[in-house]
Amino acid sequence: MKRAIFLDRDGTLIEDKDYLHRLEEVVIFPGTTAALRQLQEAGFALFMVTNQSGVGRGYFTLADVEKVHQHLLREFAREGVRFEKIYIAPEAPDKPSRGRKPSPQFLFDARDEFGLDLSRSYIIGDKLIDLECGWNAGVQKSLLVRTGYGAEVEKHSAGKLKEAVVVDGIAAAAKWILNNQT
Ligand SMILES: [Mg+2]
Image (cartoon, rainbow, N blue to C red; front, side, top):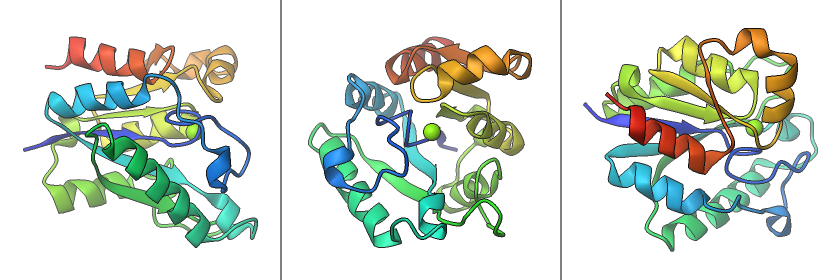
């Protein structure tokens, strides 16, 4: 069975700009593509899992989100990095949602569609909901990056991070996984 890395988007792969939806706002963190390539070369399938409540709130459309994602996929593909699938939860937080993090539903969907072993997979994100999503799905480890909201989470929610691994950013997360995989 395949192993996977589930990646949050805003604050993890790219700079978090509130309700980002224009291509010119997209800034990929330095070292991201190389880190993803290392994980891919180690045999991990890559997935993005992103809450985009700006759609449900009416700030932008799903088409805007797709445009940003096509851009990201193109940028990553130039360096040989391939995402298997991007999961988007577009609902506003007060509306029912099938997959909005911390729901593990999208990870279960990916497991069923791609034949993944979640217990040997990882999630990387900058918010507690990302870590909880991983715990709810039974992944091997949830990693918190200090980029985006991560440093704030580390400061204010330390008590909730006992089961998490906290690292500076996506490159350090990849390094930790590659050094600690079983
Ligand atoms: Mg985030």
